[in-house]
Structures are given as structure tokens and as C-alpha cells.
Amino acid sequence: MLDQTKPKDVGFTHEDFAALLDKYDYHFSPGDVVPGTVFSIEPRGALIDIGAKTAAYIPLQEMSINRVESPEEVLQSNETREFFILTDENEDGQLTLSIRRIEYMRAWERVRQLQAEDATVRSQVFATNRGGALVRIEGLRGFIPGSHISTRKPKEDLVAEELPLKFLEVDEERNRLVMSHRRALVERKMNRLEVGEVVIGTVRGIKPYGAFIDIGGVSGLLHISEISHDHIDTPHSVFNVNDEVKVMIIDLDADRGRISLSTKQLEPEPGAMVKNPDLVYEKAEEMATKFREKMLAEQQGIQLQPEKEEALEDIEIPSATEEVEVPVVGEVEIPSEPEEAEAEAVLADDVETTSEAPEEVEEADEADEVAADTETTSEALPEEELEVVVES
Image 1: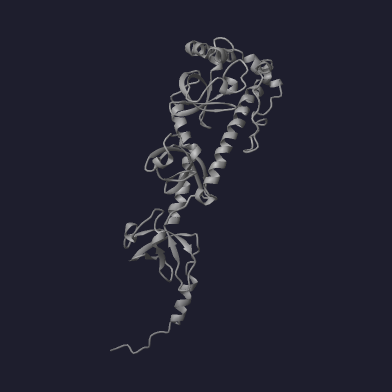
Image 2: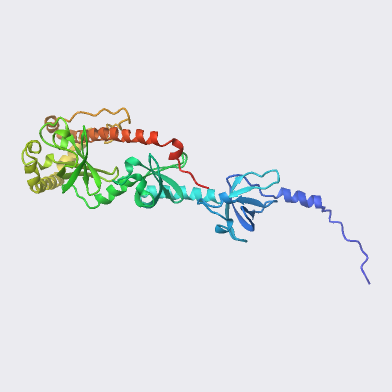
């Protein structure tokens, strides 16, 4: 016998069901990263199910940080992966997605990590302009200023050449990624150099404050105060461009990529570099050995006198960084040569201040040269060309 009872009225209409869906619908906002599944690939994009009421869409140009010609190069049907919500719903309720933005964010995170590690990376030059060269680092476009390219080749010949590079500037907010070829070469060269070592180099440039010496592909500064014990009005009175010289390394600064040189420390007698440079070169190794022995004796002397170190507790020692002033680019005046006689008369507790004086001179003088390079670069390359562009 059939049951003739009427079905119970559950009191749940289609309108109720739609309202329930609206109540528990996820709210998607631009900037969110959400999982999605590819369910339809079209000629210039793809439809993605992210759980919204309407399928989201990803255009071809948002599929990769690199240039792609078809969606199949990046996506496959039924593939599930993360997507970045690029825009809010349009009039049809459809969201626009991006993979490129996720890759872009991760690329910046990666280059910040590489910069923090002071890593050296290698990249191929893909274009040049009047200001420098362009490379790709983790998919981002990096710029190498002309002043940071250490090669005698014309910039145009660098295209397709792979270069070792160090990070100069990583600024996601300003969309700037600036690299240095020169710093990478200097660091590599520094690993094989030592303070007190005599090297043979070639004069590549002469400035009022000193001479730049090429030593095996990297440039070191022979400051005017380190040429001779005798006073020198200008380095031109001692050197000419392309002169081959013997110099001694007196400082290696890997952080700033600088090599400081001296012929003054190689003089067998004061003024020999001015009066008889051949004698200086002949006695270079002998004088360098004495210099190294003196350095070693000074270091051992400091270790053997702990009483003097304890006495410093009663002395007010100024901050190591308080007196260092960073020169303002474009406003730096080249200071005069420090008077050595006065420097030798400084008391032991003022040694820190004295030792920084030549460095400040060198900093200021090199800043002038950097300023000149910077002005040339900035005029040659518009601001928008300096920016990292994620190419579509």
C-alpha cells in the first residue's frame, strides 16, 4: 500500500538558498593571494576557478614575469596554483588575476636576500644605453651605471656577455635595482691581494688628488699624500698616463670596493720618488719587507702592553663614527695634502682622529669623481629608464 502522506514542508526556497550563498560567500580583494584551478584555456588568457560566483580571468600578459607567447607555456588544464587578485570585480562580477605579480614580489624578496648576503651574481647584458648597461636579475631588470662597468670594451660590445655583479641599490618602492661590475671584480681581486704586497700597475688616470692605477683589471688609488715624503703640487709632476709603476698595497676595503696604494712607503730615502723613481722600484721589495716587519712589530707591541689598554678606561674616547662626515655630492672641496710633520706630533690618544684624516680626504676626493660620473649618468639616462620594469 502506497504512502499517500504529503512531503513535509522544509520551508527552504531557492531564494533562501541564494541568500545563504551570499551570506557565506568569500570576499575577495585586490592584493589577495588565493588558490585557483585552471578549467579553461583561451587564446589570450585563461579562466580560473577560485571559489567565487563567477570564474576569474588571467590575461596572457599577467601570466609570467618573462615574455610568453601563449597560455600553454605557463598553465595547464586542471592545474591548481596560487594567483594574485589584480583588480576588483567588473560589471559581470569577474575578477582579474595575475601570476606575474607573485613572481615579481618573490623576485624582490630574493634580491633583498642576496644583497643582505653580499652575494656576487652573474647575469648577461641584454641591452645598453648612454648611461650604462641592462641585465636581468631574478627576472627583474637591473641597471649597471657606466662608472661601475670595469672593462675597456665599448658598452655596445657587452651585449650577450655575462658579467659578475654586486648589488649597489635594491629599492622596491622606487622600482630600482642597481648593480656594479666594478665592485665584483675588486672583491675577487682583493681575495688574492694582501696589505704590504708590492704589485706592478699601469697609470690609467690622473686627478688633482692622486693617480688611479690599474692592477690586474681593477683600479687602486695612489693618493697624492702617498706618492712621496716630499711635498708634491700635482701627481702630473711624477706620473703620466700609461706609465708602468710599482706600488705597495696599504689598505683593502672590500665593503667599499677600494684599494689604497703607496709609493711613499717604498722610498729608501725621503723624496726618492720625485728625484729617482728607478731607485724606488729597485728597492721596492726590500722596503716592503721592512714595512711588513714594522706592521708586525707594532701589532705585537700592542698585544704586549695590556697596562696601557687598561689606562684608557680613564680617558674619554670619542665615538668612532661621530666625527666622520659623509661628503655631500656636488659640494665637496678637494682638501689640501695633510701636513705629515703635524700628524707625527699627535699624541697617542689622538691616533684615531689622525688616522681618519687622510681617509676623509680620500673620501671627499673620490666623491667628486663619483659626483661627476653620477651627473653624466643621470643626464644620459632618464629616470624612467633607471627603474626596474617588469616586462609584459
